[in-house]
Every structure is written in structure tokens, then in C-alpha cells.
Length: 423
Ligand code: GLU
Image (cartoon, rainbow, N blue to C red; front, side):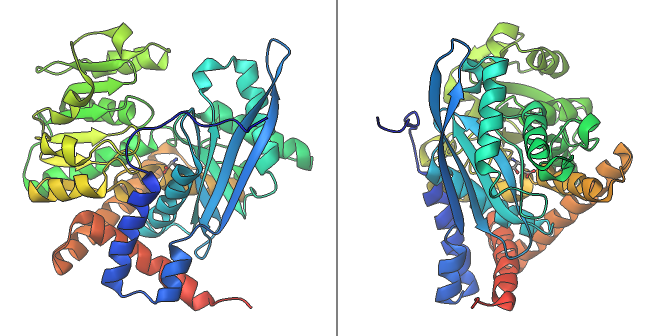
């Protein structure tokens, strides 16, 4: 029987986007052709087809991946995605973005990503646990606190991380907390990790509003994707007085010119409701959220959302990429022409991996921090990365994405070159 296939996914291949962004930086850095090949390729790719016992007694085969892009700067790091349309090229692109992201914010990691072709919402809790424990077992040949450290991504959460940590710990016979980050606090997670990506976005927007002399109080915001990134970012921004006028999830989109009651929506969402069930605003069609006249547009869903076509209708002044790879190179060109300031994914959503790093350090030291310390360190690391990116962009007269890539790729190139080619 043929292996299970991912659901068809329309639009650009994320790997083409990731490679195009890399090639641009490599050209500008005049990268050695050999190193260009090394950095443009994923180092290790594990594909696994594995059986899971379903509730009705049947057995179903699922397909999963774990890809490590580059390990020159440290252990591989990156999330695990459960999604019906996940594919190897997507996981490769996401692994590559993790390498650049970790290098940009200067945490000592290489990049990796994992994925399983599955709709987690279609599984019972037991099926999800069975699938997770078997997938963890399959990838246990590559994951380890000093080799490759997974974390949550689209479709996975702290519960899934606890099962992975427990599975690896059962195999070894002792607790291996540092093998994943984004765990519940009670099993070695860190305070502040769950909110970290959204909080990072808040810190970046606070810095931008200061720099551009725009008051955050009353600034308008639209958020595509109301999950752990978009939902938290919207809630924290609303608490600071921003007016969140539009939010969307897979069920639809809500709009209220006067501002949505984000706190209530996020509470409802956490309790399992979809935005269409929660209401509280007018419903808009799919792409309309992207074209709302707002100060800040935060794409925090999946890749390939801002294309040349959707970019033409964008009216936001700033695009803050909460998702990985939400803008295609064509979309980027249109936004540049319209002078929309884009804070690229590898900076905008780096709050997650920054606090994952803090969690891992705490696990390795068996010494845990207060939440205040986590937040202060996150703010310090992410805002200094923004300043560095802005300075480089001004210096070289390039976009923030290009500047971020120049910084990240040179760091990875340097580490790869200094270590040399073995043997
Ligand atoms: N999945 C998140 C990301 O794309 C977090 C990765 C991590 O913390 O390792 O950045």
C-alpha cells in the first residue's frame, strides 16, 4: 500500500521562499560557492512511517519528519508541527528558518523542525498521545538535550511536549527534562514560555512605536491566526491600550472598528471555542483581514499568506511576521514598493526560541528562574536584535529582512567555516 499523503496545499512552496531569501543574502555576502551549497542544504532528514493504534481497535499508519538544517553553532532546535498538509519541503524550510533565527538572536543553536501529517483535532486524546509517543520513539534516534531539542509549533502544545519528554525519559530510565522545551512548568518548563512568542511581538512593537513616535495607546492592529502566537500577541497589545480591530482563525474572521474584546475572545478560544462560535464582531471573508486599514498587521498563521496579489491590498504601515514564512518573495517586493515596514519572521517570532533557550538552560542547571527574569531577558535579547537589524538595514540600505538574513547567515557561515570540513 502507498504511504499516506499530505493534504494538497495551495500556493508557493515554502522551501522556494526560504532558498530565495538565503540566495539573496549569500549573493550580497559574496559567499564561497562551497559554503553556499552547505548552508543551502539541510544536513539530516529523517522520514518515518509509523503505526498508531486507534480507539476503534484499528491500526493507522502516519508519516512524520525531523529535519536538521545546520549544527555549526550548537544543538539543533525547532518545533514540531501537526498539520494535515505538512510536507518535507515545508519542514526543510522551517528548519532553515530556525537556523537563521537562532543565529540572529545569538542563542547557541542550529536549526531543525519536525512534522507529522495529521489533523490533531480529528484525534481523541488517547489517539493523540499514542501518535505522539510513537513519533517521539521514531525520532528518539536523533533528539537529545545536547543533540536536537524539539518544541511546540502549529498543532502541538505543552501537553504534547510532556508526552515526548516522558517517552524519552521512560526509554532512558531517568527524567530527561532538557530534551524538549515548551513543557508544562510542573515538569521542567519555564515560566513565561507559553506567552513568549506573543510577548516578543509586544516588545518589538513597543520599541517600534517609540522609534516612530506613534503612541501604542489607540494604535490599530489586525491579527491573522488566533493561536498561541496571534492570540497572546493580540491580548498583550490590547492590555497596553492598542485597538485590535480584526482577528481570524480557521473558522473565520471578526472585525470591529471600535476594537474587539480580545480578552474575552482569547479566554473563549483557550476553552476550545472557535472565533465564529464566539462572535462579537462582523464576519469578514478570508483575505479581507489582510487588507484592513491598520497600523500593525500581524500574520500569525501559516506560510505563503502575503503574496504579490494579497500584498497589493495591504494598508497596514507595519507587518510583524508572527508566523514563519508568511510572505513570499513576490509579496515582499510589493510591500517594499508600498513602503510597508516588514519585521521579518526570524526576528518577529524569535521570542519563542529565546525563551526555549532559557528553559533549556534552566533544565540543564536544575535551577529555575522567576517570570520577571524571563521577561526582562527576553526583552533585552529581542530588542537588541531589532536595533542591530535596523542599524544594518540603514548601513546597507536594505530591508529589515535582508539585514536580518545578512547578520544570521554571516554568523552561521563563520561558525561553519571556522570548524572546517571534516575529514
Ligand atoms: N516553533 C517555534 C518557532 O518556530 C519555537 C521553536 C523552539 O522554541 O524551539 O520558532
